[in-house]
Amino acid sequence: MLTITTDFGLQDVYVGVMKGVIATINSGVNVIDLTHDIAPQNIAAGRFALMNAVPYFPRDTVHIGVIDPGVGSDRDGCAIAFSHGFLVGPNNGLFSGVLHQFPPQKAVSLTNPKYWRSETVSSTFHGRDIFAPAAAYLASGVPIEELGEQMSIHDLKEFSFPFPKYSENQIKGYVQYIDYFGNLITNIPATEVRGKQWSVIVNNQTISRGRTYSDVSPHQLIALIGSHGWVEIAVNQGSAVKALSLTYGDQIKIQL
Figure 1 (spheres, rainbow, N blue to C red):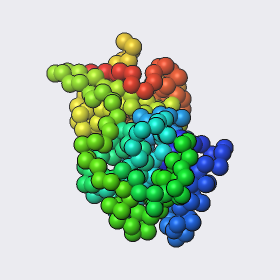
Figure 2: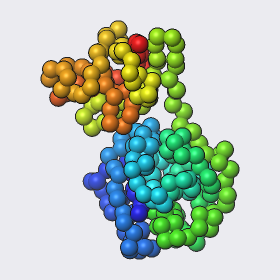
Figure 3: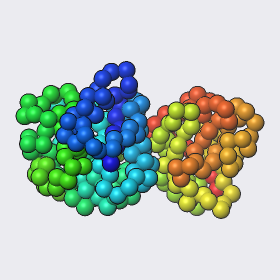
Figure 4: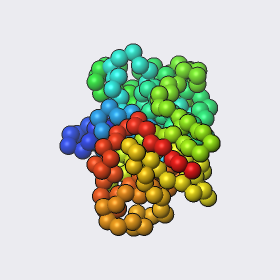
């Protein structure tokens, strides 16, 4: 199985072309689109999407991620082996959320042109010319070591996102993702608040906690634990991002 996550959208042919390259190498591989609606160049959103999707796939799945503002620069393209499968894409921190859950076992730089689409590579579309073919070959059983030069796992980039800060009665966290509904997903895990009395403070406004969206009236704010396992701020039948004017990296507080 092979998944694809990009910021390409669906208006253009980029995603379809990547699938064509994959099918040319291995027409039998099962290709699943995770999402192509990551906002352009938003590595944080791509990181979150992959981190939350990968655990639901069978072992040995190959995951391509292409949110790549540094395409054509001197940033590495990489393939990474971990306990649940493989990751293929730019070495820019996109995979760091997955690798916090499942530490990398092996990594290579995608330097072997034998496993590119051709030796002539576009400077703006490595998804087509390097990442899609490398992933298709991995899904066909080619050993990861054949794809290029070995990398130290310490050279895999970390996305520079602040960690929560803890004090006796308060947790300071940050918005790490904004979903289609406008829900604000923080980087505070459910384990820090489960079984406790807590509320969220944003811009001197206290938001009460609940179990599900309908615990408050329509258009009212609520804090809860989302299906992804993180503390989330939502509006019942509305948008928390519009109500609070927050964005990626903005701080929120949990009062215990």
